[in-house]
Figure 1 (cartoon, rainbow, N blue to C red):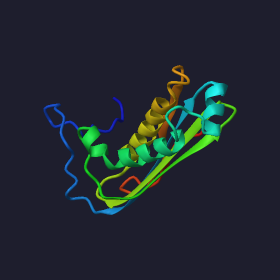
Figure 2 (cartoon, one colour):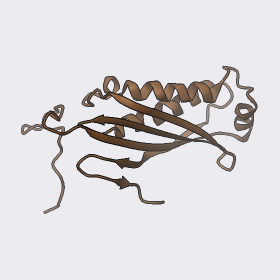
Figure 3 (tube, one colour):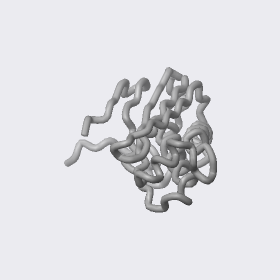
Figure 4 (tube, helix red, strand yellow):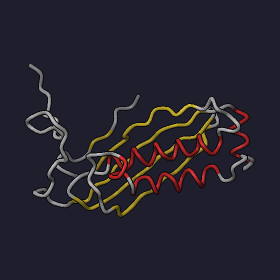
Length: 163
């Protein structure tokens, strides 16, 4: 027998349900997610120089990530709408990849966490970066999107293991 937690998004009939968080206490919660976009050296150089055909690739991708975090409950069926108090998206050059590292941190004071909002922010920022630069390089790859850490809630602090 395994020591596996019950899936909270399934009711006693095995059907999808939105979890009732009304009895939970609103606490400060924060989550950080990361991911990467890998591309050719020529595409990386063009973005760094500001020479992409569609304009400001990184600024547009960063803004898209922020906007996406705010829309997560409309994109993922069983997510709760949350009052976000902080959404920070950074996109850092990684010349050795070559490409970019995307990091999103989301914070709220609510009854449930913001892991999905952080993951959504990174995912949409990466997709937007791809969209903005696809005329230069259709072979770009979106890689390694994952939760880096979460703070708050019943389970407290969690951090991904180093790879």
